[in-house]
Image (cartoon, rainbow, N blue to C red; front, side, top):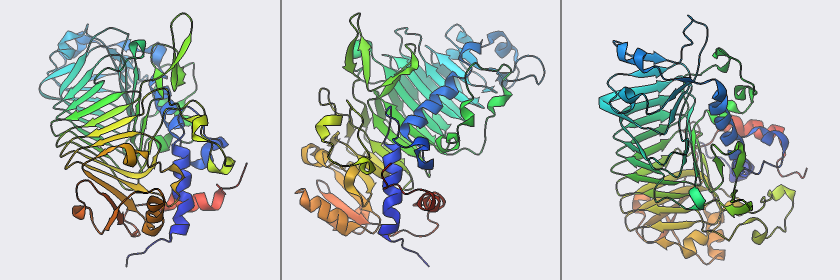
Length: 467
């Protein structure tokens, strides 16, 4: 028999998870993040996983690839069962990059630098650890075409003012971090173009062991971090990047996944993780300039859909850390928001769809075309529900707000802000140009909330207690 959770039971859990996840660059105020994971920790762990063997990478062996009769396996040290190495692929291995004719499978990470991969027919590229698409600051756009790409641990796209296209391909990995470096702080029209691509981001049953590397790294093993497994539940962080979906592209974020849209980013080939910030330093005089905003363009017939159990945050450019509610009230928006640059932006064309799980929202710009759809789940605590995107946005399509048995609270919240809305029972009843509120009772076992994490959180942590 369906079981409905009392909103008062879930309120602290929902809000607590959002209040942790929303933190990027600025650490969560509590040590250990109350057993949850922030976007800051998520991003740093994924980046550290990619950089773990940065000084010990080996070049892709094109000769061995050419002589392989079937699948070519890279990332073996060469001495039988002696360990794993990371492999760097550049345009010097033209037989692979311009005309891939066989499956390539890596025991370690695959680092693809300033080149794409074009397959003959359909080919598979896999890594037991990570796949990273990076740049050595060459001014070259790249394309990955006709590929099945699988990375057990995660993926990183970190390029220098270049366009990367993934075309007629499938990508499957738990987390994907997209972070860009901009020349002179200018926004390229599109940093990542997903054209007829299927992207699946969710928990993987396989697990890579960082102890299997042939050589020890000079840095600590990121896998030892207690929140490593939380990162592997999957998700997508877009940092100061422009991502465009066209031609039936779909991105699916699985159960317990995380999503973040932010202008905070890591500047690869600068100081690495030390450069992680909302701002960048330019010129000989060391001028500090905010990073450009992130933009998602969801084209006609394309979609990004997150499982309802996931958590998302649409970030605003920051100049200071935004306090948690438990740290006291009274902090004005002017104290933390950076109003000197444009907000992060989401554009959804007619027939496009963005569906997010439990979502926190800071000021951002929304352009929702007729017959487009944007939906998200709102927490009963509305601290992280900024409504300026409704008041100032272009809402010609369907804007749907789901709630867990709290439609009265959300309704009162919208009323107090002068926002007109209608209550409906299902998404198919939503109409263009309206804000629709739909109540969703929680059914035990339906995967809508992480009950295991919920009970541990309620028992172990008094989140609203001041530190």
